[in-house]
Length: 393
Image (tube, rainbow, N blue to C red; front, side):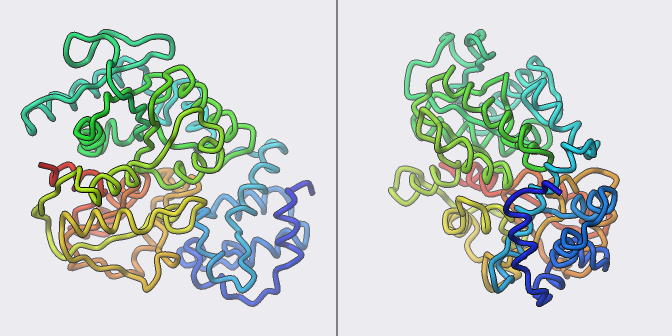
């Protein structure tokens, strides 16, 4: 089987110690050894059929937790990525993941929103910002060829330092407080904000499907960066999206690029951004998105420093960010038909009594809201940027 070089290497090197089994989210949720890192490696060794591989490797959340419990550091998330690429080339493509990828390729976002709908949502957010903060930030929309009619003010084109923002499509529709935060805070830091109507999303579901799609979406980001020619590229709150962006886009970007947390942290520690405490339901529980604590470009200190500045004390569920729990929405498991799997997983963790869960990733927030609602747990779920927006003065 041409499953990829790293997948073959991991299959040879795994010693079968079992350290990865009890900590794997999909194994915890299902109790099926085939749905564990060791089980998946075993399937490769015994030459399992395509149907078996599909069932097991599409239950993987690609959270990378196994790599930090494995004595050899084997990352079965990377094995999963390579096996899924093999499955796609063999004609087995996950329907939900493929649909999301096609939405992005055709419309530049995972939901498949037409540009006019994105524009309407941005304009609605700007009106809310003006009402809440007293003035609308300078925001410009680029349609892939030119700037459309000015969103704020009379200017059609930005005249100052330009920040090309890639928010999440979920932030545009489900978590618009995060979108307000991006727009307002970037403007406060002196940037004219540009949103591309052609690529208004952070996520790269090609990572969950196949290499060709993953690189194609990465190239879409690079093409838009080249068209806009910003002073800086700013990436929004998305875990796996940041991992892929940092791997494939940052090294080739013609403009400096960074995560919104990095930018806000830098501004706060230099005294450029002033933050006050905000009222939230206590206690506050912080959860690292998997690809912040275990991805290629870790974001560990920045969100914690910002969170402490705006809410004070908070708690965590683990003694190391590397051990953070998966939301069980990664890898495509946020699909509606797998919600029960996530519910079974989260039944094992006591969240009752927590007032606010802070999880700065659009996928994580969406999944946890649905899971906690299904479990009857009354808790607020938010990200870091939403809180910083409320705290900025």
